[in-house]
Length: 589
Image (cartoon, rainbow, N blue to C red):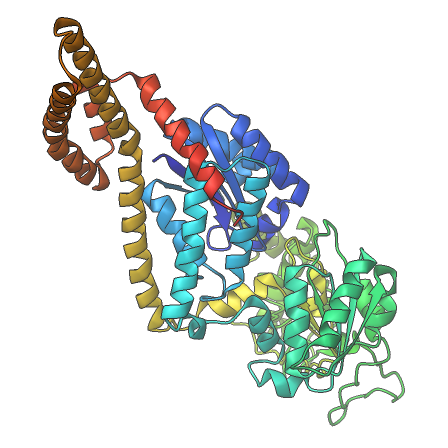
């Protein structure tokens, strides 16, 4: 066995890299075709999901195979090889089998135990079979992976260790509360009609939403999904289909939207989301002494909370002389005007000026004592002439360490209260369908692949996970033994065929020497010679199969061919004949 896996997943790469490396359906087909055309690989299959891209191949050389598969992944993903390489992982032979079986059981999923991966593995195998890039090894491997995954779900409680990505995403939207209570009566918009979108629509219907609108580029598929939802026995949801052009209008009516398409660009931009919620966001109530919405000079709408954000009792208001645009950044959680994050991306000159202003404020008492100007509770006014030395020193520091050092402990800043969301968005696509900037909009709650990864990172592992791991280990050992035993079978068959030919030749030679031998005696002699040969070969062939099934037993086939001087072409012919018979017996996955 020379099974090789090269890939990247949410465990090895940041979401931004996975998003850029995502393969379209056409790219997957071309990748398979180019892989089997490459010299080191004879079989290939691609497993591409929203959080993993893996290329499986049967190779004859390990190092050449790794180099070729890595290069092909980079070429077809559009991410340069140098950039992609640090995020790639490689599994070989038994470790590759272990990896795929773990994936099939949901152990390597973002949400442990989710079952959607089984359907994705099945689709991957079907694609490879259709393109005839999967031979005996990958057919056996992927079909066994499906059986192992089903066994794990039926024999253990792995389903309790996690939920499907859809269910987990909806729980995050509901902030861990009861999904059915949260969803009851809501209007939902589902963008896309593929397997993930269909699962999301069905989950929302069971959760009790009042209406589901399905939008898809192929309108017939949207209609079909809406019809299925309407005909469901366990729900009474109202469902209808709309073309993709209707998404902006439908978004203004929706309470929750789920998007999972194969689009390469954004389906929902931050601007389109702002337009959808405009006028719907409840304005936060004004605190004592503040101008609220509707008051003179007050503001309303999604951006209002981010624009106010000042905190009383601190030195952070809108002080005179501050070169930093406080209104643009103080709405950010954890913001500190003195901190590194507050000045990230500022021009060098602005950094220098801002640092001097901070330094001026931090020693305001001393400056006042020396005749400087500062109002109580506020930082001193910047005086470039007096602060020439400070600016020069800070500029040198910036040039050396690349950041502004903090001159005092940042004062606490109250995060502005955000209004309750009026629009819930779940983005399950890779690359993303919804602009990440939507996270910053008041009145909107967005859960995407990246936030799901963060939320599931610290999830407790159920005891059933250990049981599934034992199942995977046992199945890997059994698969490896069967594969190694099967690898030596053509050699054993070729050996017995050669022995039968020797017997036939010797009987023919006997006939020429004893032409008067009657049929009864000839048959008895022939049977005796065959029994002798069978007995001589029985113990060695049984034992060599046992040895070959053990780890490191691959060399026994070579030894057998060498000892008995077997023709390699004869062995290969037997193997081809077995593969042909197996392919006829094997149906689609």
